[in-house]
Length: 192
Image (tube, rainbow, N blue to C red; front, side, top):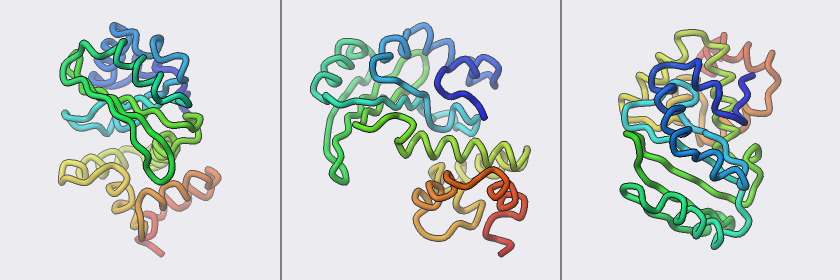
């Protein structure tokens, strides 16, 4: 499986991934956010992004006031900067947005280790699914995204997953590779 703990893999990626690597290293964003264990998540690491897709960076944050102040100091000078904290489902989160180098950025902080955050788990299981699906996988997801679907609903639609697409993908995250590969090769729930 790909090592998402660094952004080095972007150098071997498509042109947009290489552009993302350049702007992220120019901004030193991962170095600046290092105390918060940042991980680039979302569609750009998976190569299923659309032109308006942002660079989503998830962080492990326990002092949200300090995180807001730090992010303001680091990135407040960039275009369209905004940052706010709020509680969702009993959990505090801080989200900062800004634009730089032709990319919109979103920095998401939650009081959970990044590898335990839903955004990370979704990205990992989606990466596994795309690797198992071959070229048809990214094509099918991009097609649905161009039709206006968000990423997780696009995967759920393609695989025929019933119910809440976010919860359904989290369930697949825990599946062993063999079981997931069989599911993907059968066309998901469509053939059951």
